[in-house]
Amino acid sequence: MAAGRGSEFKRLRRCGSDFKPLRKCVESRNWSELPIGLLLEILDRLILIDDYLIFGTVCASWRFALAEDKKRSYSKSSPLPLLLIPPDDYEQDFNLDGKTNRKRKREIRSLYSVSNKNICNFKVNLPHNKYCRGSSFGWLVTMQRRHDRGDENYKLYIQLYNPFISDRRNTLNLPRLDNIVQNDGDIQQRPFLYIRKAALSSDPLLFVQPKRNDFVVMAIVSKFCKLVFFKSGNKAWIPLEWDRKDWIPPELDRNEWGFFEDVIYSNKTQQFYALLDTGVVIAIDFNNNERGRVTTPNLKQITPPPPTQPGLGWYKKYLVETSTGELWQVLKEFFYTNGDSTMFQVFKFDHIGVNWIRMHNIGDNIFFLGENASTYHSASDFPECKPNCIYYTQDLCLDQRSAYRYGLHETGIFNLEDETIQPHYDTTSRSIFPNPIWIEPTLQRFR
Image (cartoon, rainbow, N blue to C red):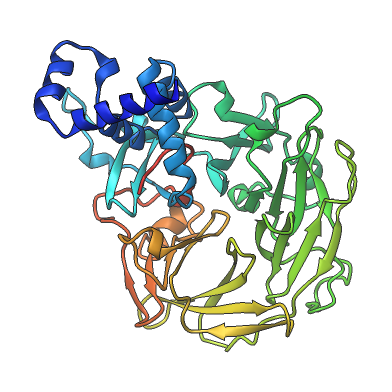
């Protein structure tokens, strides 16, 4: 069997380098004789999980190509994230009747590949009134406000949505935040600001077996920027209290939660890391909990604040963890005085000295920052991308009003060496809203 497959591989590979055999198998429509090189090219362009899996059911030679692709994939790093962007401007989109299709435009978004520098031939069916408040493992954390019948107040509906899955598994409904919202007073004026950011501990589809309730969603919510979490199998969100000792504003009680700016999940320590506005990092450990039980995780401060240099702008902070467990903190500073501009400060945590070290060069690394769970990649794996750069998105524009105020100029590529900024893509023909967000592709290769 192994020898047969080996000879088949060689025969199909030779077919890919010879036009006549390729033309013959296409004209005869004997799809089992398509060259292995062409089949691998087809696999490179698949987006949906369903298509990827169905590919291997066609015939033996296609299953063999799928196995070869898996071997090839294991030797590669994870694919670059795609940028979920607004569609073209309404005024520039016409249907066959010559009329603008504005209603449809409010239901779709596009995907942009920073490596290929083009818009992918793939539309994401996601209404614009569903705000993306996080992105992890190919899943978007969406929030939608709407009225229930007979109720004048808004309710916040939370979902996990994976655009790379075509069937009903692509959406998971999470509990509403009613029990959390009722402690925060009136949120009716700006409800889209309620969830600031959310991150997942793992891919929910990996835990669909019976008696597996392992994935967790951690979110920063409310004007106080406090932490809440949802554990699969639970029926409600649970707040986390952190008694702040690093810095207490005078208008808040000592036991007030709040003022977290970012949250990520550490694959190395199997913990969430939450970043306070002072730059202090808190570790959130669920490992001591019994599976399926609703218990409070352990919270522990693991870093001091970094030695930041005060500026004239407004700061936004991010956490990034590399595959080796290195912990980085990035400060994005906005200036809205003499022309809008953005600057970055980068710090690397020294686990031995237990302090942050200011870095002016991140070497071969690439950081992807925004409303997604921050990710990192090596530029040597993606020569079409720029090393020592931060690929970032605007995460201030939560509604159309602020989007038109700030625009998409706060989305770009920051080069740490010369402190220059280049755009990801041409934004002149794109809608300003909704906000772009990075999303990790699932079982596909945009390289």
